Length: 220
Image (tube, rainbow, N blue to C red):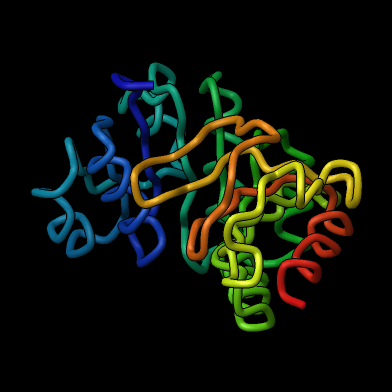
């Protein structure tokens, strides 16, 4: 993963946060925005930051974006600019194009033009926060697709000392515990004999219904 180059187009709240996090993970990041003030604010945080119009084909070509591993269109409130930028990136042959969608319709258009991954930050965060509020032991919730979910569940006192064989999530609910985060470290691909203690965090994957059923068992 290290050594990858990312381009982030649009340095508003979402784009600047995303770009900064990618830099902190050790990647090279080029930030692009039409607004000079936004670029100035990020110039020292990113590998490179330039004032440019990502809807101008000549400008996009001159930036060499074709050579980047991934380009993220994070344009905040201009749907037309977002779509035009995504089209240019796809036509240039960028390996992976990710785009932020402002609405379901915007997302459908982005999918139609071949964007590799469409993200809905506000919607997805709303779903995650709602699920966290609804379940005291649910620490995080990510919808992998319309059907599959990965969730982090805190182990309550009632289940402390249980083995995964005791809980038997695969046979009883159809979902799998793929990791257990303990104070001393993380157990990846735990076995049936591994025990969970209070405040351990189980990372569970399965269909939405399977994970929800197991979550109810943990919370009862």
